[in-house]
Amino acid sequence: MKVSKTILESVLLIEPEAFEDHRGHYIETYNEKLYKENGISVSFVQDDFSASTKNVLRGIHGDSETWKLVFCPKGKFYLIVVNCDESSPNFGKWESFVLSEHNHMQVLIPPKYGNGHLVLSEEAIFQYKQSAYYNPSAQFSFRYDDPRFNIWWPVKNPILSRRDEAGNYIS
Image 1 (cartoon, rainbow, N blue to C red):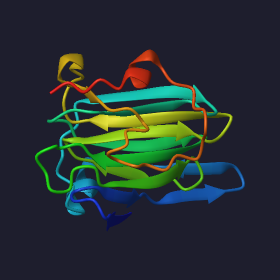
Image 2: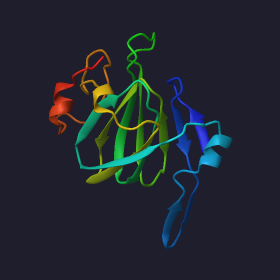
Image 3: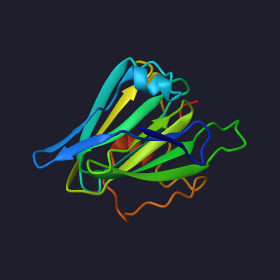
Image 4: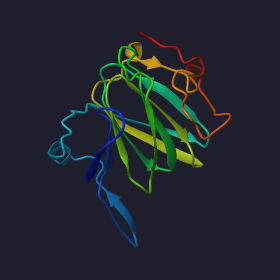
C-alpha cells in the first residue's frame, strides 16, 4: 500500500494493493496492522455507505471529532475535502480527488474538515469508516457552492438534498 500526503494538513491519499486476473479483482480495504505500520493509528467504530446516481452531490459535511476513511467500491465520484475550521489560517483550503472502483484510492479525512462528493458514473457507492459514532447534532454543513471556498465542481445543476441546498452551519 502507498500512503501520500496531500496539500491539506493531515489529509492522506492511500492506494491499497489490488490483485487482478481474468476473474476480476480483489482488494483489502482495511487492515489495522498494515495501516498502523504506515503511520495511520486511527481507531474506527462505524462503517457507512451511500449509493447515488449520476449528478447527485452530497455535502459538504463534517464535525469536529471524526476521522473518515473514504473510498469508492462501485462507480466513480469526484471528492472534495475542505478545511472547515474557521479558527484555522487554512480555513477554506480544499483539494479534489477522483475515486473509483478502478483506481481503488482512499482518502483519510481528519476532524474539522468537510467532505462532499459528486457522482460521475451512472451509479456510485460512497463508503467510509468513521472514528466516532454519527451524531447529527454535532454535524456542520456548508453549501457546495459557498463563495468562501470557491470550489470547482464538474456539474452545473447538481441533484441536492434539502440539507445540502440549505447548507446550514452548526457551530
